[in-house]
Length: 101
Image (cartoon, rainbow, N blue to C red; front, side, top):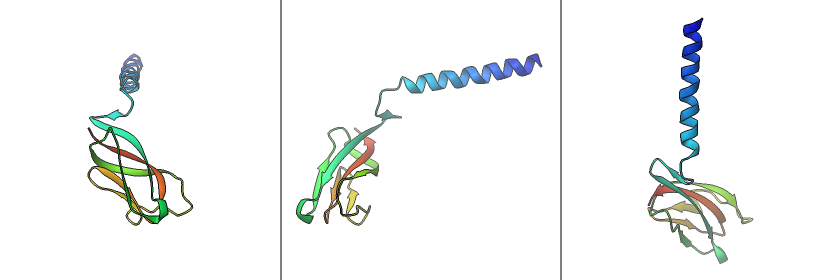
């Protein structure tokens, strides 16, 4: 029983330390990756590219909030290049981008 309690205390202590370390990580920086939010608008149904001042090479992206009545569909009327977010055909949205500085 004593060994079990010591083992549980050790496991809990390691878990608590890893959680505390994760909470002290700078916001927006996850394992060398940087997170930013880009709002991009296709005004007049025209193509537009928008850049993040913090992310130089985008590795992944997701739509966070759509601002237009037009449905924003990834690959159809919004997407990313290596350095930018693009929108087209009336899509207006805020996109979360994660990548390298």
